[in-house]
Amino acid sequence: MKDSDILVRMREGDESALEYLYQKYYRMMIKLVTSNSGTEYEAKDIYQEALIVLWQKAVSDNLVLTSKLSTYLYSICQNLWRKELDRKSRLSSESHDSTEYMDHDRDERGRIIRECIGQLGETCQKVLTYYYFDGMSMSDIADRLNFSSTNTAKTKKYKCKKRLDQLVKSIYKASDFLD
Image 1 (cartoon, one colour):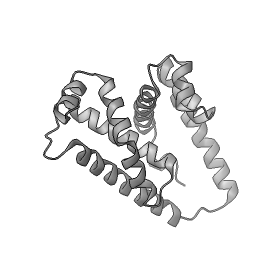
Image 2 (cartoon, rainbow, N blue to C red):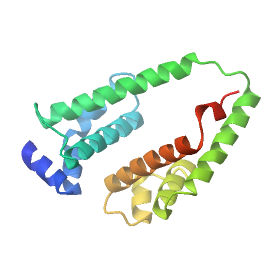
Image 3 (cartoon, rainbow, N blue to C red):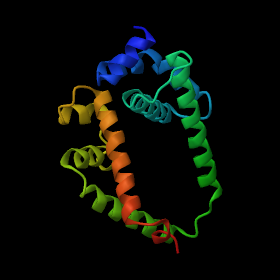
Image 4 (cartoon, rainbow, N blue to C red):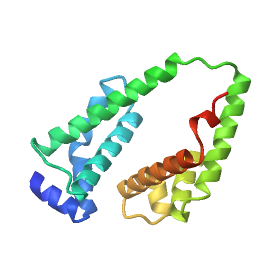
């Protein structure tokens, strides 16, 4: 399939184009992250995010492709992975006061997250709860919720998590979490 055909199909909302890309470049994107201090799990997450960025740009007609699609996708993954490494670096350099404080903070954050998940639609509630609290795989979630594929479940999880992040940020400020 040509890059131009893939983009046309994506603009038309054809998820099979996304599926095709996922399969075609999977190994390349996994290798990018795992060869740069990442795990396969992190690599899958980064690749998923990259595909969603590509999808959103294609659908919004905001994509001007000046290279091969694989090169463009690779650069998205590379940028996302660099951001993740920077984030991990900042987190590891921060010190936490005490275990008691961390436990209280984790419990409070969990309460807030559960409260905000409850304000999302039923499908988002199920997807996020199954994934984050029940530890279900994307494949199991896709089966349980009758999604057409695992990638559809991943895309839904990404969109729901983004909606959850926006909701939390709209209700709470960073200062609510800091003493």
